[in-house]
Amino acid sequence: MAILDELNDRDAWALFFGYASIACWFVVFTPQLYENYRLKNTDGVSVQFLLLWIFGDIFNLLGVILEDLLVTMLLVAAYYLLADCLLMGQVLYYRLFSQGYCDDGASVTSNETTHLLSEQIENVDEEAFKERADKLSERTQKIVRVFVLSSVVFMAFTLGVSAWYFFAPSDDPVDFSQWHVVAQLLGYASAFLYCASRIPQIMQNFRKESVEGLSLWMFIFSVTGNLTYCISIFVKSMDRTYLLINYPWLLGSGGTLFFDFTIFFQFYIYKIASKK
Picture 1 (cartoon, rainbow, N blue to C red):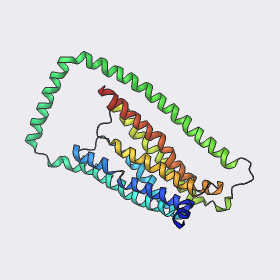
Picture 2: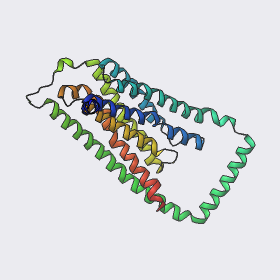
Picture 3: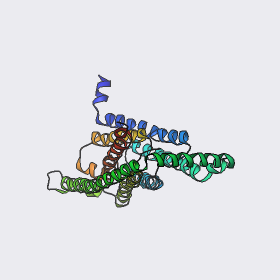
Picture 4: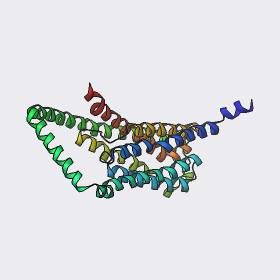
């Protein structure tokens, strides 16, 4: 009975989903680190994406500390900052240092071979390639327009519904005395950076019309981690004051889901559907 009572406790469930989120964050970058190591380059990863993510993690960690939120949220924020700094280190290594270790003679031979093969391919099917490139370019332009419009609609709808929920007349008004300005501003800054961080990666994928070098599993773990992160907050309490205090972190985790699913869509059209 004691075990059942503990399982029925909201705090216990909040910790359960919180630690499930931590488990996802502990492995979230592992697939991308391995993909970079396997390919010996990081061209598939947007540097702007990682920079915005890192600054988002910095603001997130400071906000969690000042707002004295769940201990699981603090652990996630601290580890996540460490993990994405590790990934940034790998990106810098492959882009700035590793190229210097290649043998000059081997590089020339490899470049000559690649050039000859490229010429043969262009001569054999140049017209068909151009038609396909024009078609893909036109299709990508349409998808980008839909992405931009849907992004604006999604964010406007989310913020509008949230404002109505928190500030509409109610028998249970929000207690703003518990609202700490500095911590909240840091939280909102991190939420904005998290959501904005996906945009450079998404646009890079659209420009290249490829997700080559990008790990799908990194985003699968990211989505799972963000979902369990949000659930841990909702399970803890549905009190409006509590949710408003945690809203920047809900927005940062929940808001990125839309952009992560956009990247899933890119994996489908550029990697899965292209093979059919």
